Amino acid sequence: MSNYSIPYHDVDILIPAQKFEIKFSYTSSQMPKFIDSMIMRLLRISPMSVKNIANFLGMNQRESRIVLDQLITNNEIELKQDGLFHLTNKSMKYFTTVDSIPKVASILEHTHGLVYELTNFNYIAQNPDTNMYGLKLIASSEHAANSESIVRDRFQKQFYQLIEDDIITLKKMDGRPAIYKMGTVKKVRECTVRKSLDLNIDAQADPQPIKVLDSIMSDELKDKTYQVLGQSKKGNNIRDIVKNLEGFEQLNLHQYFKDSRFLASVALFDSLNPMGNEANNGNHLFIGPCYSQGNSKLILNKIKDILAKNHPVQNIYWLAPDDAFWGKSLRFNTFVNALGQLKNKQNDEIQLKCFLPMSDERDRVSLQNYRKIIAKEHQKYFYGIKEGLLDGNCEIIAVENEFVVIILHVLDSEADYLTSFPIGSISDDKSLAKSMVSLFEAWQRPRDENGISFGSMFKKSN
Image (cartoon, rainbow, N blue to C red; front, side, top):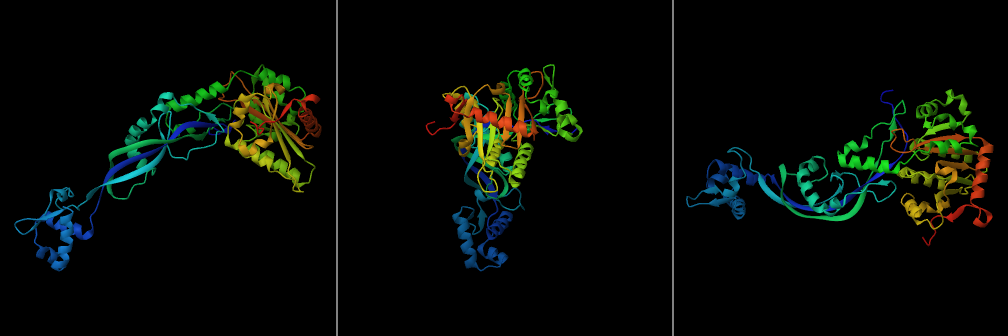
């Protein structure tokens, strides 16, 4: 169990980066044509006449003259007053020893596009990301302003490593290429590089170090990542969570809180041993957000099984928490897309309605923040709702007439978790599912009927 780990959250970071067009010339060596090489090797040993060269190569003098004339044009051999052909100073440099094979140094032009992250200017092999679904790090203004000159210097230092890593592919030649002259280094565009953080706990529910950042080898990048996580994780919400668990007693989630602390190790044990935990009464306990790889599969398969049995499901309701880490992952939109495409046996679409907390319908800050995590094609599923429901700490997914998912987004200020800690329970209690759907129906009523929904979140006018 020493190597055991389980994800407790699903969060991506977006590393600020820029794509550059880098122009340079490089030198390398290649062997001359075979016949040219043979002639130069002969002349490297001793000057020779046309007749001797022709006899040695098995050519007539006319054929030899054609080859020799081209070598003279290239300034690689010369005919001296003694009537013999000699190597020039230029071609003498092709040899390292008397009996070595001649190699011609060439200067070639090359243009290459590279992505560099802006915290420590490491080149990034993966393609840049155009999506904004994640926690974005901020580069220093100095790095952003001077990026072209910094990349110019960094590229020259990393040149051989870029070739060894097959990031740059140059024309195949003998010998090791070298930069002859740097051309322009031009910033093409701003972009981001996505890294999914491995937010895992061990068998004792203690958080493990983030390893994905080790591959980039930047202390500044690690510091910025821990900084943005720390800024997003605020306070302690355990007292509020325990208070709001009243009415959800059948889920038995209260057993994971004691003396204003979250008993993560107990929750971990019960999530891994559902058959051994009689107190759960058939509820399925899980750790992590609903859109994590394992949890989303569990929830989607459960809904699909219900639809396959032709159960009357028309609506799926979803209340989002007011949590800084919620939705900051590509898997979030993957999960939304899968829910939105669900159909019953009659091929009718199931209506997905997700409610996002905001202060009022003019809350543009919340609107812009939600735009950053919700794909444009999924915006039709989202509605605004008055913030403060269950103190913003609970997430609810209610599948009409069937089951309900309750997820607590726990913030324990005395624990070392880098983010909130989602812990969820799936209940097949039909009465609980019915009461949750009734709540959603009441919330989405018009404002003049005491509803608290602001309607479609992303109106065309926005």
